[in-house]
Amino acid sequence: MKKIEAIIRKSKFEEVKKALHDIDVTFFTYWDVTGVGNEQVGQVYRGIAYSTSDIQRRIISIVVSNDFLERTLEVLLSTAYTGAVGDGKIFVSEIEQAYRIRTGETGNTSLN
Image 1: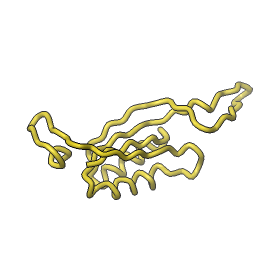
Image 2 (image 1 turned 180 degrees about the horizontal axis):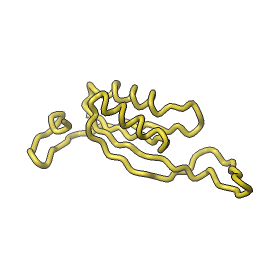
Image 3 (image 1 turned 60 degrees about the vertical axis):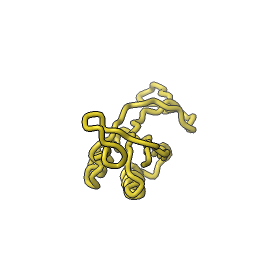
Image 4 (image 1 turned 90 degrees about the horizontal axis):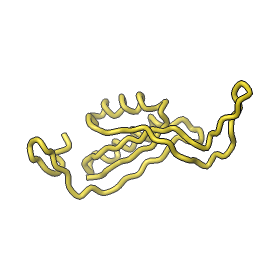
């Protein structure tokens, strides 16, 4: 099993969520985060300077079977993409075991 953590633009979240549901990724967690990126230039809007170094993003955390990893990554990469700086990052790590608390199921069967 693999854990995928994707940091994406908030504006792309609904599109990503729908695409994940379309490939039967029916459970994931997400939360809003603030990060600091490489861009150091501020923006001026109506005469007020705003810092763009603090970036509002959303993290999506998904655990999938090894067989489902590539398909999930393809969906994330294609739907979260804008081509502009700040599209985000995806991290993949190994999960040793998973348990469904309600039924006691373990491994891949606990993910559905």
